[in-house]
Image (cartoon, rainbow, N blue to C red; front, side):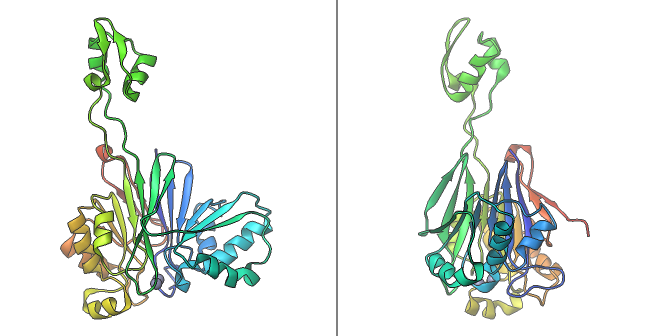
Length: 312
Ligand SMILES: [Zn+2]
Ligand SMILES: [Zn+2]
């Protein structure tokens, strides 16, 4: 099952020629989930995977740089006659926001489901869950964690054969946790199946100061996408505005023992390299993706998350 993160917009507050406003697309198998939808996101989609009929959009908070792409994208979906429903999730206030946007959006031919989430709510999906947790940003803001279900342990085929189990349906039954009859009597799953293996985990913080809640949510995450609006020399300003520095995000990543830290929401004053270097002084596995870069996340036993740079 492929799991991949595509950075569609890595700027914070205002766009630059190189960086668009916040939007991150997570793809897991056939599921495509958009986190934040800054102005211009539909064009970033067109320039990469296409303006696909997304089914779920999660908004971290209602600062303009994180949601203004929604009205235009909904209009485009409407103009091409989409009829599949679209769900938009966010903190309380989402419905009020859409009431204000209604005259802009106008009539749409598909069902728009607006779901206001309480913090720590967990939405179960097929094989994974998406959980919201409270961020610290001066306004109501969420981070989101995508957490895969535990997987069954490794199946020891050779051991199963030795116990007289015929390859075929009985292998599947054992792997699913059922006992079967072998040549010498009953064979139980624990004889041939290892310890359950953890699923993968991605955490996206949205705008926030570094917090204990993120540290807990990101514990042993395969990928932490943390905002780093500022460098450490602006630590005071970061604190005052509910943002993070590259150093602050890297310290958190180190404590949470994540596999890879991706810094986003880059202030227009930075190119990115200075934030990456500052992060790496604390946490070596730090990247500052550019727009259209991807991170591929294999199952842990198959390797480390890989930063795939877009062609430029
Ligand atoms: Zn922002
Ligand atoms: Zn914000």
